Image (cartoon, rainbow, N blue to C red; front, side, top):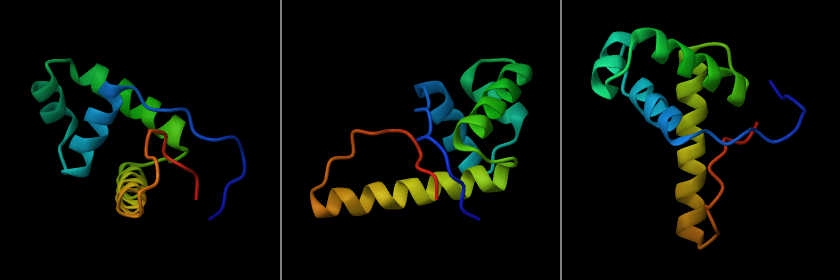
Length: 90
């Protein structure tokens, strides 16, 4: 499904950490323990991630993150700049 609109807002470092743990299948309580925050804070981070990358569930966020990482790996292999840390819309 294509979505039109402005580029995604870059994720702060903490949201990248949360997204990385989501990609590993971690539950909210596990993420909270690992990062030393409350489960409520984790829920807030996940909600913010969903809004910023325009998804509505964990699976979609993980797929989006993996696609983003694959694209960056390809850009690095081709010698292109990968300074942008926002996740592009498909």
